[in-house]
View 1 (tube, rainbow, N blue to C red):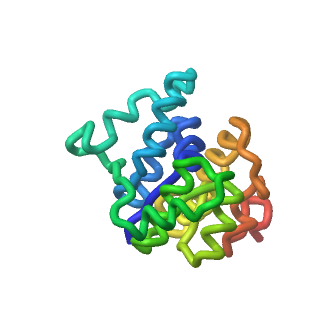
View 2 (cartoon, helix red, strand yellow):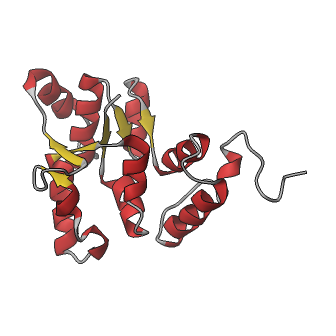
Amino acid sequence: MSVISNTTVLSNFAGIGALDLLRKLYGEIYLSTDVYQEIQRGLEEGYSFYAGIDAITHPRAEDGWLRLTTLTGQTEVELFSALPSQLHAGEASSLAIAQNRRWLFLTDDNAARKLALRREVALSGTLGCLAIGVERKLWALEEANRWLRGIIDSGFHSPVADLAELLKVPGPDQQS
């Protein structure tokens, strides 16, 4: 299944210098051109954690694993136009593309998540990405929790402080 992300998940991983974890997890991730423009505005506003993103974004970089896409066809344009104005263009375009193409949608935005669930769009976010990596044994729970703490310290409002709460594995203080 292809994956498309809005800015929130990318920002959380980029903010701790761990954007490559998403590559490890999904291989390649699509970004709508609206999300790419949000990232470029972020760079202009001083969000230096986005520095170097062009070096991993296709077609800017031939071998880039972040791949630009855009709304295509009348269906996606109509889905995009029907979304509430409270969503930013990046969230709305990503959601419209994910719904039409049946892609996994990565977002931490509450309004976008609620709409995706109502529209039966496959969905994950920062916590889900970290937890899936643990489940797939790509990284240890302790590593994922360290990254989660960094993301929280950067301003992410997480409902959990320990990913063991989301997984069917005991945390370090719950082992017998």
